[in-house]
Amino acid sequence: MGVLGVGLYGSNEPTLNFETSVNQSYPVALEIIFYIGFLIAFAVKLPILPLHTWLPDTHGEAHYSTCMLLAGILLKMGAYGLIRINMELLPHAHSIFSPWLMVVGTIQIIYAASTSLGQRNLKKRIAYSSVSHMGFILIGIASITDTGLNGAIYK
Image 1 (cartoon, one colour):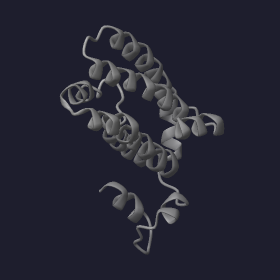
Image 2 (image 1 turned 90 degrees about the vertical axis):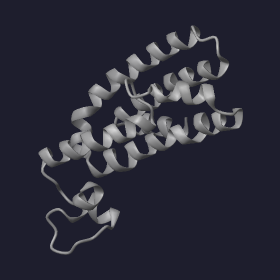
Image 3 (image 1 turned 45 degrees about the vertical axis):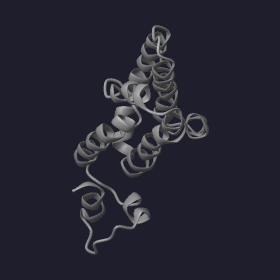
Image 4 (image 1 turned 180 degrees about the vertical axis):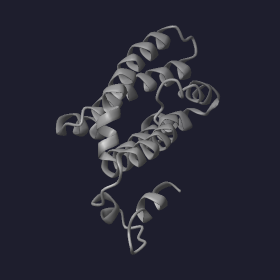
């Protein structure tokens, strides 16, 4: 059902216009269900603990230019999705989940930075440092403040 389901929910005229969907009110239970689904999808891409395990292996096996694309651009797409879909389209559920996201982000920063220090492979070390870095972005998104959101977007 996804965004299509949210876009069509409770409207007389079916639309996929994002602005119309953002301005529409949804039941909190429906927001929570969609929020969890989108959070899992974006948590793999972001990467958020414990769904980060693909990144060190990918970095370790990839060419250096691919590693730069992964760390510099592709990981940020999960953060963009979290901001654009979860935060804007599902604001009530985001306010419910944001304290938990802050806790996970804090744990992620400490765990990934500590794990990064023990890596002998430079590319895996960079991968774990990227996971740690994404913890700061997760905390910025979860803060629901202009300063935190700007920091998450410009980081």
